[in-house]
Image (cartoon, rainbow, N blue to C red; front, side, top):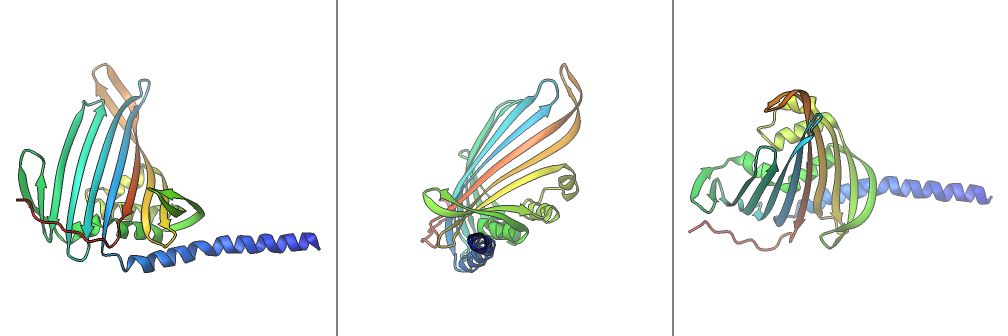
Length: 248
């Protein structure tokens, strides 16, 4: 009798865990419909290694901090890019203000304007990206944790790889889909959902491997480039007022 009762309790627990994820996903999609503004922080670290007897490395760190108004099509973003390792060191910072279809870019030396189109706004919407990842993925595990001081559900995702390639190409227009399918080796994704179902962010690690022939001074021969891209996105201050003006 006790054994049968234990089995029933275990089955109920498994059923609860299995049904929890779809409820979370559904509530996230509903919550996202009401989001008009938010702030974001995005950190991306890229490790590039030439894997042979020397294991030459380089690192690129990209930080983006900003705020966006999806309804009025306005965004302000500060960007800093640093690179070090083989190929030399590099650093650049700039501010981008986008109002409608005009982007104002200030890199401390000058300010210039560029035109942007509808696709720019689709690519810039971090919430849209997070929802798209949910659509193309299977939720393998639901955990609980903390992101930037907010208690969250953590959804471990396993994306459909064909759909993931299309996802990357959709949000990164310069990516070659054929090359991406060939060189993408693995992807690991965790999405953070607040307890009141706001999409709080994503932690994603992608690994690429590309064969190559190197000729760098004394280095010559067959090798391959391994690239590990670690991205963390944090979203916060949903539906808070955003006041963005063009630069003077």
